[in-house]
Image 1 (tube, rainbow, N blue to C red):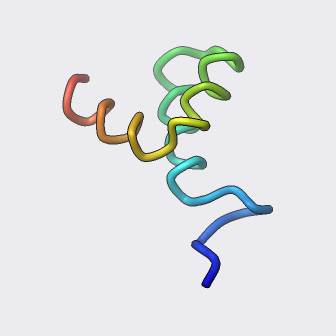
Image 2 (tube, rainbow, N blue to C red):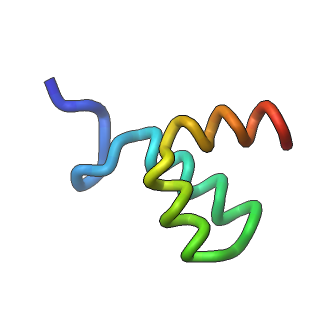
Length: 48
C-alpha cells in the first residue's frame, strides 16, 4: 500500500518542506528537511 502523497512525495515530506520554507525561506533547508520528513516535523513542533 502506498502512502498518501503528491507525485511520490509522502505527506510527511510535503509538511516538512512547507514548515521549513515558512521558517527559513531557504530552498536548501527545505530539501534537507524534506529528506528528514516526519523527524523534522516532530522536531519543529517540539522545539519551535
